[in-house]
Image 1 (cartoon, rainbow, N blue to C red):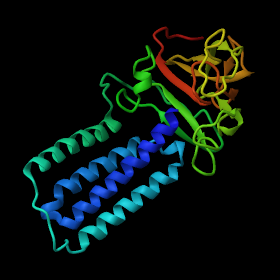
Image 2 (cartoon, helix red, strand yellow):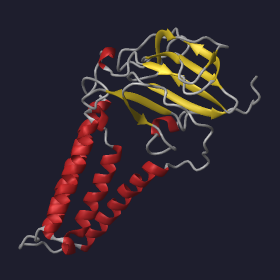
Image 3 (cartoon, one colour):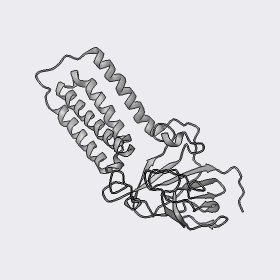
Image 4 (cartoon, rainbow, N blue to C red):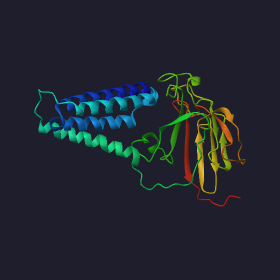
Length: 279
């Protein structure tokens, strides 16, 4: 199962970065800097991209605290008396791998899409609780899944966090009620007209991702500036109708797991409205 695999890889990369750091600081800055640099690149990568939300986002913070603490105390102490002479070949490969991880960390913030612009401001479509963007952003690599979907390059998948900092009661549950966002109220992020609604698609039991009769339960809003699409509502839990005007903050429905979705979440994306001039 993907969540379990990603969780294991997250913890493994975190441990590897700590072990490499320990080796580097024991040798001292002069001899150990390639290892320290490699460790820092891996640590920054896994801090940003790690699947911490499958375990607890608090583990991300704990990892950062442990890493920084070890780095500070490691640099402050004297290097070990016995030191291994640095290999030029190993140093080169350390720099090469470090450059890759650091580049990925930079792309986390910049993305790979340059022709993007802000359409308008949207409200958060939730009111109570803490929420986490499971995936989103300007293209690769942070938004890899949506990158390959037509019209969804900038889409976001949002989940809700429970008190333990997890989006469910386990790493991956087959019970819909275990997910914090399931049946959570979704509010309109803007004022607009409801252009399309679907509410007849059943909620899938994870990890089933079966499309329903009309793919996924959703609400499509239109304003003078944009179209806003929100998907994966719960079966029969869309409160608005086509042609209805909704105000920002008005309840639209309840979050579910309909359509092509591995677990309950809200999919949201916005597009420029090229047919301006709503009444």
